[in-house]
Image 1 (cartoon, helix red, strand yellow):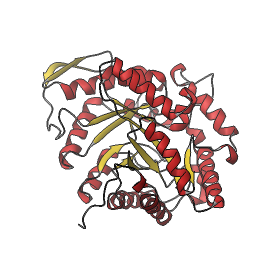
Image 2 (cartoon, rainbow, N blue to C red):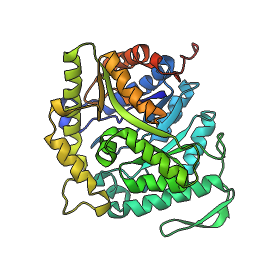
Image 3 (cartoon, rainbow, N blue to C red):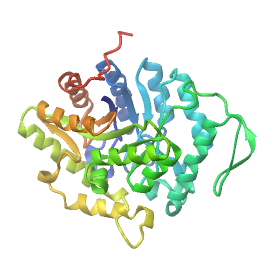
Image 4 (cartoon, rainbow, N blue to C red):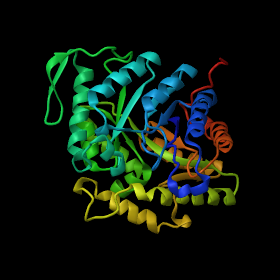
Length: 360
């Protein structure tokens, strides 16, 4: 099992005077990505968020192109593109270009998002986001798998054959993942023969555990003709030396979760039916206490416990876990120290650890 660096660049208004300067924050994340490669991580994943309501990184492709210049081996992916506020043809072009500039290291991941405040300024319809997203994904896979391609849909049409340039280094396209917070998203990934990525908390709500979600995802994919589906998951992580340190990590996670609740749909009367499950998530998070923060959300505890939790992921069919270190106001120096601790003390216990790169 492989490991990646992951951040959502969380910096919500609820952090108050402790909010970071967004410009400095993003420059620090660049350094964390570069150091992730030096420490032996397989990949780096960054978000798409707008207007500072949650995170501060609006363009994962531009950001990852910068990281590509500074690294040699690190896979580069978004977690995730908020696809309904983007044009699918533009996304194909941008990720082809990222793949070319990084010499075949781009990965594509998309989801629908959950913040209506990120839809409205772009003229996107939050209420119709599922249908739009499904068609966008079908459009992108047609554009990647056919050259020239044409597409006839309800929301997007390219009626005359078009050839997209540049072509990606990885043929016929970079690895593709659908971020799955619901069963219809898993079904979509299976139909399109692409991969899936889960957040363990949401997976546990849907299937009981992220391992069971992985098994169900692979079953659906194979039934749809995808013989080797990959399943990833994201995890908050803090390798702790002592119970007090683990307790502080849980409290920090709860502070983070409570701080971002305003961006989630929370009113059953106004939430679109296809995203109403987020209301359940909000209700559970709002009532959660630190002692209820479990392995379903965060990997924390001593080294042996962290290894045990992640071994269960590996045994459940997870191919890669992307690790969120800098959640809840963790500073840059502490983030680098946490990344180094994990790489030194946990990563060697897994077979597919990627060795550090040679000095540049």
